[in-house]
Amino acid sequence: MSIEDIILEEDVGVYKTLLESTRAIPWKIEWATLRFAYIGPQIEELLGWSSQSWATVQDWADRMHPEDRAWVFDFCVSQSQAGVDHEADYRALTKNGEYVWIRDVVHVVRNPDGSPNALIGFMFDISERKRTEEKLLDMQRELEELSFKDGLTGVANRRRFDMVMEAAWRDARQGRSTLSLVVLDIDFFKQYNDHYGHLEGDECLKRVASALSNIVRNPDDLLCRFGGEEFVLLLQDTDEATALALAWRCLDLVEKAMIPHGGLGPGKRVTLSAGVHTLIPKEGDEILPAIAVADRRLYLAKQRGRARVVAEGGN
Ligand SMILES: Nc1nc2c(ncn2[C@@H]2O[C@H](COP(=O)(O)OP(=O)(O)OP(=O)(O)O)[C@@H](O)[C@H]2O)c(=O)[nH]1
Image (tube, rainbow, N blue to C red; front, side, top):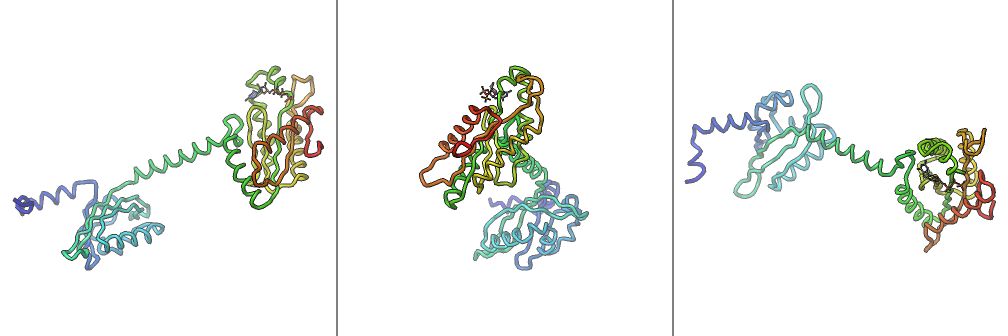
């Protein structure tokens, strides 16, 4: 017994009722004329256009978001010509001018010679799914951003520094351009914590980071919290004289923030010390030793009395 024997003439009405009571919207297009032979009446509830108003594939294309129209149309036509079942997600225009995300699932009915005879399919309203997907993407972007930020101060963290530094290092080596590193460290921060407590210490770190944020000149500059009470300023395409001036400006910005340091006595303020290293990376040079050079200069600045900058030659 074949399927045709089972589906009796009177069952057609039953199938029609079933098709028209699903949330998915059934449709059929004759390939020879590119006209709709049928579209479920549910389309009116979803988009506002009556089923009678869907005459040709042009109506379908016209009621698509302009950004989706060309690729969806070309994709569906080429897949149909090749006799391949396919699906496409696009924004369909509603009668009141809004857009609804649709997933159109298309089956190609073929002639015995393989050429397309008709297209039949279902349109699904996937707006809710798209909204969820967009929310997830937003959350993913937010998480990614957070993973590159220092949780306390909001400036870039070590992870971000490592990533940007590697790219900057490569660019500087290839382009033979100068790269400067400024390592900055809060003076007598242990006394600060001892005097005010760790929580106030955290507040101080935030204020220092906020003052330092004003130093960034362009997207190629990166200020990061390197760890503890140490910050690093990465300056691409920047010579030593400029880096030295910027390092002094960092110290100045923090002094101007006037953060009291009671641990050092009345009227004392939080200060920074800095070490600067400028170089053009050569083949075989490595990043960590370059940071260590800046670190050694920072140590010299501390030894010489703090609240100062040391660059090459000990100046
Ligand atoms: N509140 C707070 N303190 C921190 C944090 N990270 C590191 N520290 C403190 O920073 C202090 C650093 O102390 P030291 O390395 O001795 O340096 P210092 O007291 O600043 O002295 P100099 O650098 O020589 O001027 C330590 O007491 C750490 O506990 C943090 O996230 N929050």
